[in-house]
Image (cartoon, rainbow, N blue to C red):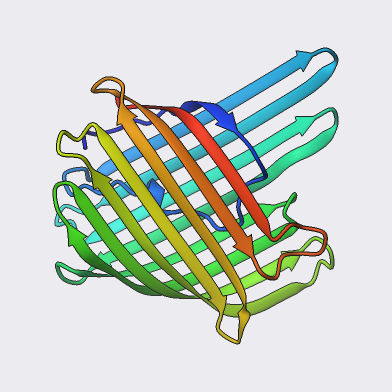
Length: 253
């Protein structure tokens, strides 16, 4: 992949609100030739059609840095999403995520992260995470990449329905796959997260995302993705399931 300054947009279709799990895998640049990269995405939209008002604000920023010997990897991610229709909130969420990755050998890396998140629509007043664990490279070739990871994390969550902070431990297990065709004009990516409470296994979160991107030109891709999330112990009056469909353009500058 060439060095990227990503400015994405464009056609965003919401079936339901954003998921509670954050997909970090699709923010990584899986290339050892790129050491430093910053991706910024800022969107604002306002519509007034037949006295129906809709406002949408989205900001996301990602900075990735690798040391010269490629053994140390740092990722900083921030996102804010807010939309309002006729005075009613459709989305109100934000997060900041910091991750450190240490290469131990050709196959194994050690990861540590911390994250702050809120999502008013999904009933999350605040959620703070800190975790650590291994990341294993099953396969990496010019066209195919497959990773698996399992991290132990401490979670502090305050739900909007009771405003009490609850603390417990979860496992964050994930499988990440990226496949390109021979001509590198078509790319399929998929990731699945499974996060059970280690003291109450029926309390778990599941999230999956699949994306298909194809080249329009050498610098522009069309991307279609679907994200599914499930929380077995979601806050009161909040759906256990959520789905997001996204279509857009990705530009390589």
